[in-house]
Image 1 (cartoon, rainbow, N blue to C red):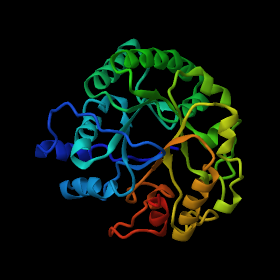
Image 2: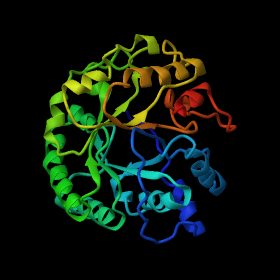
Image 3: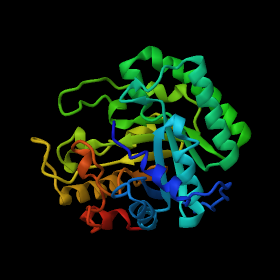
Image 4: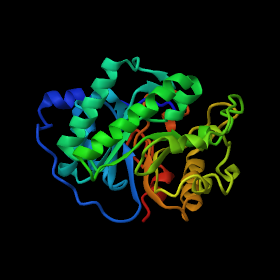
Length: 315
């Protein structure tokens, strides 16, 4: 689902000289199901930026950066290079669109930049996880022509990245609720399109999931909401954006901190029998964006934990 991610707060950090031009050493990856949060500091100050990483490692083993593909060699490298210092596994995702609309045309020139940037990043950092395309089925729903142009382009980059970094798990990301054909806010209808999975070369199948935009209460989520995925792929699964809001808005879709906590527990219960490799909660702190995403943080702005936090960090 379209969400605002703070991208340029890293600029101040780069200027401060804290990020070093180093080749990040390999971090040993623990076995089992990994958890984490996306890059979501309380503000763009240097103290809050470093403070985010100190707190994020308590939320799990991973920190995800998600942003414009053109920033792989800028913002994404900072998150990657800081990983050894703070002790997390970086998960890097690059997008080429915003809410289904291309950020820039997929001209041969732009595709070459995308390709060269992704391959150079993979060659230098050997990332454990590299997502190329976020919620790509949003592009499919807006422009079938743009989507069909992206598919072979992505598959070619998949091969190129695996050549320079065979151990990197390369994947693209789908929006789960859209893929299932659910109706957003009981207004925007679509149809199921699971067949898109098979168009992409991928080492795991990744989804974003925001069921609070489709179901008014966690108890309304069907028991097979997540297990249906097993009917369409045998590959490991990653949920790289998970969210549920915590405020009594918008009208008709009111939530609460307790309801958010209920969703976290429901999510883990409904996915317990699946081959899930990664769970990333979208925000550690509430982002400055539109509702309901602006109340999805696991912690409040004052740094105190919401009830969902205690459930999230349980082993």
